[in-house]
Amino acid sequence: MTPYDLAHRLVQARQQHRLTDAPPPDSLPPDAATAYAIQQAVLAGLGESTGGWKIGARAPRGPASGAPIPGSLVTGSPARLAHDGFFRVLLELEVAFRFSEIIEPRREAYARDEVLALVGVVLPAIELVDSRFTEWPDVAPLAQLADAQNNGALVTGHPVAYAGFARTFDFVSPQLGLTFNGESLVTEATGNPVGDPRELLVWFVNHCAAMGITIEPEWTITTGSYVGAHKVAGAGRVQGRIEGLGEVEIDLT
Image (cartoon, rainbow, N blue to C red; front, top):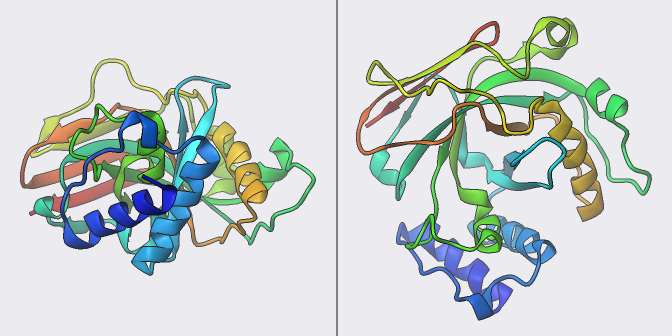
């Protein structure tokens, strides 16, 4: 299976709403660069533009990864989504960002202070995690990366201006809640695996620069779950809350 073949299969899986088999070990994308190229090929094959990105890492200062989210899959709260429009639904409560201006690729790396100075707004968000592969979650990481890092959709709350807000908000341990039909999904331990998710924005800007991608200010950049991922099997009301930032509501029908 070539990268083109995998991209084509992922496009068909989305368009036909039909799961596809994960590539065997000898047909996996050979490296992350190829997986990122497949992501872009899938967007093009769907005729979609980018509406956001999901980025994350498993530990502070650990290797980061990301994936573009099609514009049609980024929506504002309150949202109404069909549960059977996904292959499976796992819910993640996250903090997301938008930049205040276009960020162009360049040779010189963007510094941390420079990136954070370009942040425009912060938003609460719920990511719906999904996969186009039948075998998920038993799928090789590079195949998951090619498949938009398992993104299904992103629902965002109201934006809050970053300036000023960032001085008082606890990005590491915010007070939060996530419920499904009124029952809490939050475990005792919460927190983003990277600690402060803003550190991922520095990686993201330089990743896009290396790929020759211009970052648009309307893109929503979501940065990983504070509560893990929680599978819900059917219709119901999803409510997420991050104290001081706002709420996100989804009706899964």
